[in-house]
Image (spheres, helix red, strand yellow):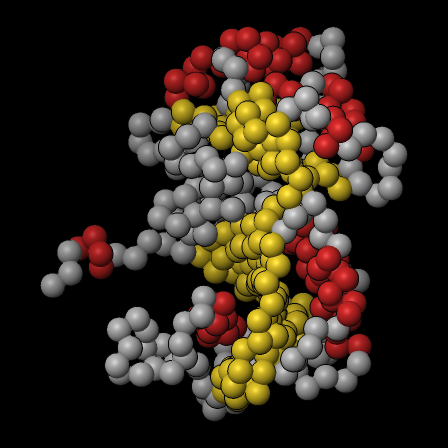
Amino acid sequence: MLPAQLGRAPRHLLVCERGHARHPRSRHAAHVRDHAYSCRVSFLIPECGLLPEVLKSTIADFGEYYLVRNLPIHELVAHEFIDAFVKKGSCYALAYKTKIDQDNTAALLPNGKLILSVDKDTYEELGLQGRPSRYSGKKVMRYIITVDLTDAGFHPESKKHNRVLWALKEKKPLEFDFLLAWYNTGAEGSTLMSYFSKNQIQALKPKITFSTLRDLQCPVLQSNDLQGKPEESCSTEELFEWLGAVLNQVSLDNKSSSFLSTYCCPEPNTVVEKAFLCTITGFIIPEKIIQLLEQLCCYFGEPKLAHWLTLTVHGFADSPVSWRESEHGFHKGGENLYNFVIFRNLDYWLHMAVGTHDDCPP
């Protein structure tokens, strides 16, 4: 008999919605923009053996991101940095290899909000205003501090700026290894590499892998029916579960001899001769994901055998936020991800999933 704690699965939340990619009020791009920190992007195209050149170039254009070692966090609140990057584009920074439920950690959102998630001792030493973490339990042991670097009152001569700078530079200096990326639309000026040239900075490129899946069982889907119908089409939840199995290379054979999985593809299903799978890992910003999503929609501009394709995006498990500024916790897995199913007619399904320590996605 299983222990009681193993019988209780942690709470997970899956939100599903339907839309059309060309509808003027479609929110698909907004949902991508609201999810700032992504570590893995995968797309699956059934009935595809060779990736079109336009998609290859879109992936190649994902560009570089940077790893800066031992970066004092007060350098992110310096007005030289704010003026050069925060106010001239979308700047992303995320503490690297920190554990959200154990360590101090930090993140800079593209809207200019600096988020610090710190333990009780650090919070008291800093002396900055914050709030208790929603996920620290009855005895508060973690606090969240938010500093708006674009606030009109946060100028170099202001008391607010001087206090934050003093707290982070002198009273309780904090430093992290940071992942950094900056997106701007052609503005002239400094680059992250040159700005942090005195620091230990390294330019990195996303890792890209391609594979072709043979004789893949795929669920039959109807774009106008999220719930599915027996013997006609599968539901959005069934598709989401199937996709998780495919992306994790779980066998769909349901063999009794398998000790790993007895999962099988939901019914009704069809077997496709080949499917193209691409996975991109790294520090991937929303602007690049939106460009990829647009090209995947354009894939159906010419007749294709595929009835649909998918785009799946995983967030960092130890990020301080998931969507927008919603606090994110790890609990048992730190899940925060979303998935698009794009149909021939450009209808789409959107799944947004989080684990126990998260708000409901927007």
